Image (cartoon, rainbow, N blue to C red; front, top):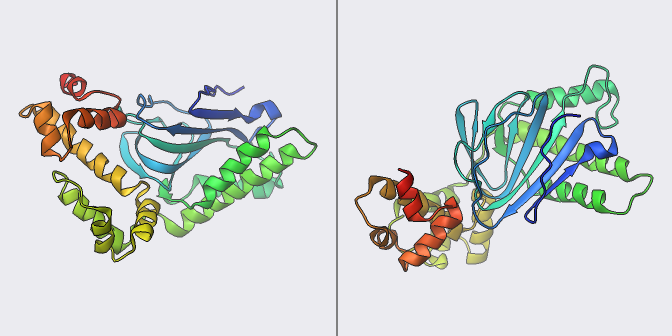
Length: 290
């Protein structure tokens, strides 16, 4: 059996499909983190490839020395034998799914497809033009359906049903890869992102003011912002503040309290709470790390 870490927890679910005799899609995992967790150590999956779908949040990845930043709604693919991890960056708050897939041998069936079609599907997945691209909301539905069917009481068609949903997911990933390539942000939301990034040291404006910048109602703005950036406006603002806080902590010129007020936090205690949520460390621990 291929060596796959199956380590479920309260906020992490991992299904090993080898127990069902699957030789193609071997595992599906999902984590839902309310705060940052330890970085993902560099590793490889041998002759398997991995498809990740980040439903919500933001996450850094490093593959063979190249860095990537994922936002909610993004798909990320690592290919066989590639060393990858989070590059020392903690696993951030959010929800992420990952699927491990074995490359079939020649003339071997893949998800019950005729050998030629199975080989064609895998070949096209392995040759997509970009490993990082925008996904679609339907992907969560498909992945949750796989998990749901797996957890139901068994029937004679349960495995066939699981493979059917897996096939639909992979076909959708392939279509999205070929249609969209790199992630795109609309001009309206891009303008708000630039405003937030240019005013990190200020108290955040009311949501209605941000919505007005995008010429949208508050409800529509919040939905569009999360759809395109992968997180709520408040989470995005805090993420930018924490990134700047790391810089100030490293420089060492300002105290923790001064940094907190410099970045518009109401108190140093609240700043420390938000900082740990995003980094797994207290500000003083981060500063001591150098």
